[in-house]
Amino acid sequence: MKLNLEALTQAGAFTGRPVEREIKWKQGETELVATVFVRPLGYQTAVNDVLSATGLHDNYAGRIAASICDEQGKPVFTVLDITDGPLDPAELAKDPGSSKRLGALDGSLTVALMMVIAEVNNMGKTMSSPSPTSSGTNSPSRSAPRSRKPRKG
Image 1 (spheres, one colour):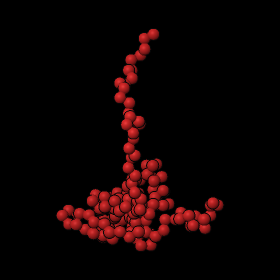
Image 2 (tube, one colour):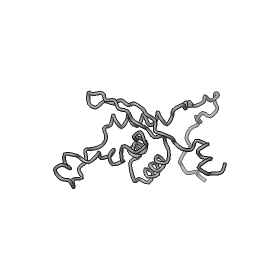
Image 3 (cartoon, helix red, strand yellow):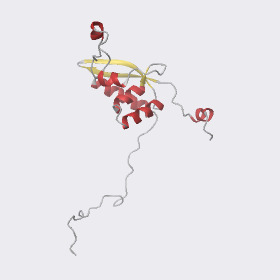
């Protein structure tokens, strides 16, 4: 195949439209439900993975920011929104220059978002289980560990 947009389109190399899902999580004693749109893993995710590997931001926050979007595929969150929260509106009302934030995204909501991201990106795939080995093959050796004592000689 020659690498061009037409060939890539025919090969299904573009992630397509966001996938709509419903998530549920508990906020204290209250169960909340929300509709979210999940962008299948693609370019944004690859960029996130590189930034995370170089220590420029948190991997999970980056994955959520790269994956959770609106119906048109525009991001809902930034990494900073997830790790530190959005700017505090009450503080902004008092001081328009305030940089105080509301705090990190709730843990239960974070888990619900990560689960829906995994669900969307594993759709239709079956998780393969390790294949059984025949008796005695590929099993760890039962011999004693090697001695670290220097040889006499």
